[in-house]
Image (tube, rainbow, N blue to C red; front, side, top):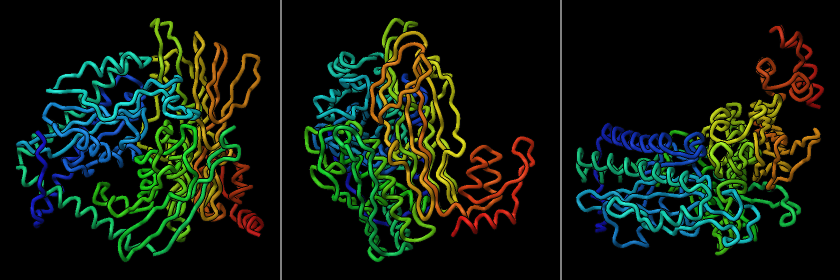
Length: 598
């Protein structure tokens, strides 16, 4: 059974009903997300929320992304399209497991569960639940493998949109494959059940919604909602200045493959008359023999994320508005269409974060009030994948930590956001809980603290990162870290300063500290620690233009330091932050800023 929906003729649609239905869809996606969050077993899902839920139309247009991570959501329709292309016998009760990055997925560690939703024999929707796995069968104990020469060395289990449920029952052959090759099989199965439950909840709610309003009304709403979203995007683009923008960032060196780093370039054309923005990623290097190549889904979504970060936030995010952003990719390109069997193990992060940053920062060239600075990058120690044996349970453990802060970028009107996480996630993931991680896994967190002065200075400052130290409680532990931003930190725009770079150290038993490379598999013995410093977000505008009263408050709140206030912001303070007597010396500040401005 696979009856295609036929869109009804365009007609006027009650705007109040359209608002009601649009919000109802958002409520359904929120219920899907809450189901997954409350029932998942691994900390990377149940605590960190490294997952996304969405609703796609039966003809494969993204209809409702909810609050999904941008890097996950923009490619949902690519995966549902694969489901339709590969299976001409879709039926109620089906569910599909899809993590093939060559068929629309992001990277192998993201397992997507898709459920085709049928009403009166019509495939009207597909519910999607995508979740990053604690383990996906990689050849190293990490879902990220930067040095994988190809997909074979990467080692992940790949499921090219396979039927994992039929008639609402598991296909046990697939379940056994996963349990055999994944290091924590019961944890994986618990997360799988959470994804299935999430997608099925969405299925039930959509059937209820359609039965209440009727299939013709829902079909008409879908067309009108996407059309409205496209019009809103066109209106937003028409307010922009026409022109062509170009920007380049440099990914950190990765010896021996990238001894000098890797330039990442974006070219943008804004055409307000036609209502289109074109983003060109074709002028970049060819695929390389490592795991940092971008998949189609990631390259597209990360470029679009950089664009939407600079647009009116009230523009709906769906296939309607996406139609006005054309992302140009090239076959065999590191930022484009990967050529099999090149690995895209880390497509969701690292170079992906650079694409978001370089795109949003490019818009700052239009003029003051446009674009954003670069947000903090680097999956440092706080995002390391930990693994080993847990003596308390007499078995293996593995989990991706998410105790990073990574300072958010400054904007034309606001300071950066603490707990930003990564550009590709846009602050939508939760920062992990120290207490939960210490109870679930045999680790001890020595301290986690915000770094004063850890953000890029500017008229609006980037948010600071944090310092984290943790290690094993009892037995040796392996930590896999893939940290960009240690050499080329997040940049400021329009005179804003760069954020401080990230850094990672191994603290040895004798008290010495060993600087670790950006990408490393580090073994920690009991009594040893890993120490990570997050990068800070870039600043927007000159620091000398920042309101001195805000600088004073930053120092009082420990966001900034007295030396940086004087040396970078040109603000002379009197009194002490310890007794709340800190104040701005107005005349001395004016004189100091005059000196710094020369």
